[in-house]
Image (tube, rainbow, N blue to C red; front, side, top):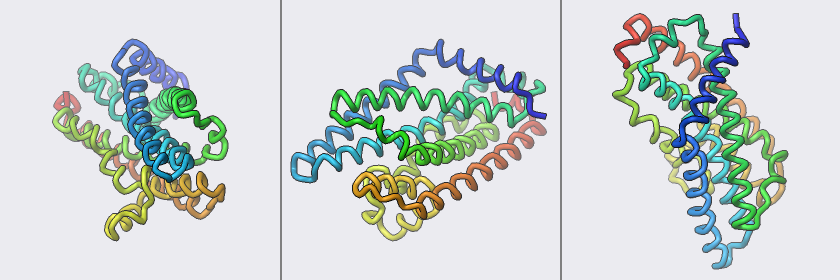
Length: 261
């Protein structure tokens, strides 16, 4: 049975790790600002050539939404890696902690870290580019939720690799979400992709969300069909990824978790 006390204890552990590790704060602040400046000034440069400020806003919203998906993904992987690096994997998973409690705790910590990173991005964008993205929180609320689910699904897939092969595959964790970035249309419309790229994009929930974000930013029109498609796919992939991680964890327990450290 799910124990809230154990879930809160896991949340407390990872919260302390986040507070004490300065590199995690650098990860939240530095990479966020780098993306914002890089893509923001690029869009601003094209805007001065005649594309308009709306394209700058769309680009910046795309950057923030991409960060939401990326950060929710890495939260799972980095915390599991932390247990492997600390050689605490065996100790952790031989306690009464259930998998659902660990997953819920990571999701909660992920939401907090993502919210902090998004707030920093909004403030930076407002003062540097004069674009107020705070007013997009309500209309784009479903978008952030779906991207969180999508990021968690990718993160659980990364955890499946880690729990199967340990530190041997740790370098695959970081580039994995960028493989999806190409086909999500975060920074460009999907129609610029070749036919094979569009076919891949159609099975990714993130592509529907970014396409809807772009449509809404430019016309104010809400396409519920895109949102429903994105929601259904993100929930499906999250459940599949969760089941996959459960299977791989069960198999690794049989083979011995100590071999992963």
